[in-house]
Length: 456
Image 1 (cartoon, rainbow, N blue to C red):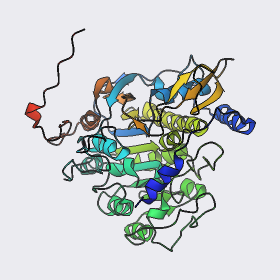
Image 2: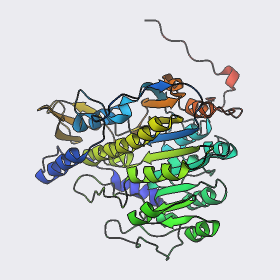
Image 3: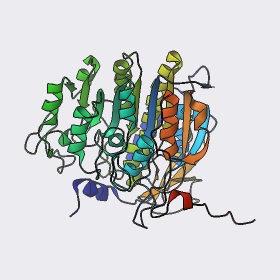
Image 4: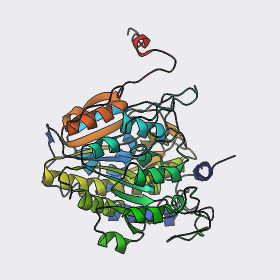
């Protein structure tokens, strides 16, 4: 049986002819014209610094490879400037491959990748906070909480979806989103939770702020198998909000904000029901999260995800893939501005994997049903097109940029499990035993000798 999540992914898969619709091009132009990321307005490029961080803001564009960042740069600030995320002084490359018993699943999903970030352990696709044998492994939220810090999770996906879940929950299957929600509020005690996915918090037949079976996606409806988790959160002391006014007025210190039934967008190919018009922006959610979390004198951990990069790449939808990268960059600027003023905050920007096999070429250089364009590079008359090679994930390494205390440790070429080690070290805390290792299934670590590099 195909799950609800799988069904949504199936519906996103599609290929299109070269984008020629004047309406679609108009939408693209409007997006490019309104995308003021602040990269050109920065008075100075942030510099790297060493030392322990009191706060960490870990940000990711789900599915965002280097070509996605380049695409966003070209349209937003032009070929000779940089997005905020690319102006950060430290650059590294991280490997994303999962560890799995299935020989066909070397390329990671978001769950296995986030588990590597959040726990330092490689695992199988679909795993949330457990190792390849299904054992729970310590996550960053638990480490931060033990150190007296506050924790926040922000996503334009369901807040209980794979990436955020791995930072604060332990389940054997990413599909158990209501159980993940329960763990977030009762076990991990996450202080600020903002994003989509109200359906996973309310029982079937009990719609909340967002009606069941909406016209834009009739399959969306409440489905919690853990009871009314919004009521449970409120009983614990969480303030609950579901719109922009509520978010603006929220004071915390415990805040739950759910702003859609499922994801905060509709991830379809161009012109086939695709929508990116969230109730609140990613930037607004990040601002509120920082406002509340920074009240803790012991510091905080904030995870931020722009899920739409991945979902629209699955749909080979260049128009809203671009929009998603731009929205993430606005949120990165907010984080960097805070970190610059604060002086004790590490900001890290990366992805869990690449999605879509995105490439950038000259117009007409590649003619395929999976090409979009032409797009114009900002401030120039130059045109280019983007091309897709798949509707799935790819196994290429993805860039990681960083700014603030301990940011220099993110330079280089390393596996995604090392990100956990670097984040824990940035806090000046002890790394749990076994974290950061990359086991090969069935082979003892002592026998896992890399193959020799062929002579040139």
